[in-house]
Length: 414
Length: 165
Image (cartoon, rainbow over all chains, first blue to last red; front, side, top):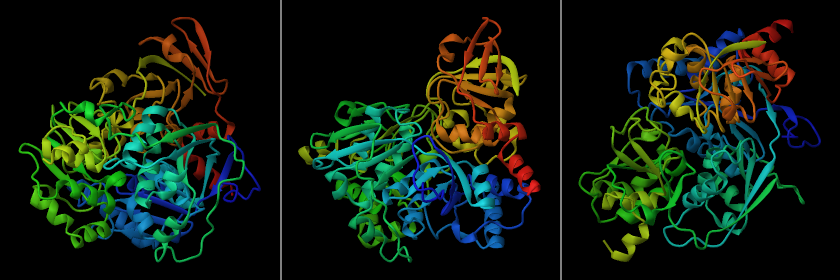
């Protein structure tokens, strides 16, 4: 943030005017941003190479109204020469941004979506903003930001089989609570993080907003470089944590005894071990979203579902996070495993996560989902329930028709 | 900058999905958004708010998504300002940016009841409960934020600043 605001150093609570390296909007926040930009009264954006637009929420257009909004964004992007990921060309914004090389370590990225914090997994400062602010960035390339204090989550130990980064972040949110990191940065450190794939790190950073955080961050290392190789064209400076950095709070976490964890309705911090919820019956199981729709997630779900059949009365939906992930899932035979099991594989988009498009719930129904929010009405009816879990737990639950600790499947060889 | 209205009170962690459910995000007209304000918690909210109200919330008001349609729905339904124990950051910024005043005030939730008449003075950070006769002080907003609010929002503020240039 010091670099972005031209200062030698910054301290928590300083307010800085930061230069933005990249701004992203999608189909539900973009139209308001474009309208607001037009009201400012200038004809062209500050830098069309630093703006990305992605259609992912109501995709493919689920109504005439959505089609009109998509059309408006498409035409603005064309007129301004902005990089635009249309239906079938990208996928979920938070997967597409790093995949296509728009996320560079050490840069400032803002996005009109609260899960923009995902990019912290690559050592970028990335945070969610609203549509009007996105419009102001389109016009000026700048944004005011308050420098956050930092909470350090130091994670050690080795995950047990079928226990994942999703279980770690749910458990951490349960400890810190839904507002426990409001306005803070959450930095993930420790040997567990160092060994973790980019997919896992993205799951962690993705959900820091569910404890109120402004951003999540992981120091870039060789895993980061390997992912970005061939994606980011220009050389980048991977910023390191300051030696002797001061933290507002340090949370030590050992994952060795961590169990599959589930967030119960209607808040993300309402967490319980999956094994305590085995009487909760489900009507839908959803594997996907910007939290858990990556190839590693689909592989894990496929491992649980392989050669088995989704329980009668359960709808299982699998949504790869991007076209790239979809293609890889086809090549690896995962799509075959899902369809053979009776799961429906849908096109890369946000899907039921935000209750705007496909896979909505009726009153009285329950879904166990790999997504990130379980608020009242999030996935359709205000009388429906959403439980959040890992891809392994959701896949195991799809087979039994009730919330299931995936290790139970293994033990019983169901 | 001062507002005065009766209170509608809510609890902790009021999220943007209950303030404005995702299925209405394709609506673009503020008056259409207003019809669904707070639908997840109280479907009668637009009727209760239409003559002007001040929303008093608990901790972490506005948590969840970055949808600017959430404060827009509140503002266009008749909400004059939101006072809460604490706010989620994106909602806080979005409210200011669309010209809906917000102020953080510790202890306000417990001390306030539905229908209390309160007056909020943003320059002083003062919240006066006229019905109960007590005064609270919230976190004062910095001058540049007050300027955005008095212009009516970020875009209006930017229009003015760009003209000046």
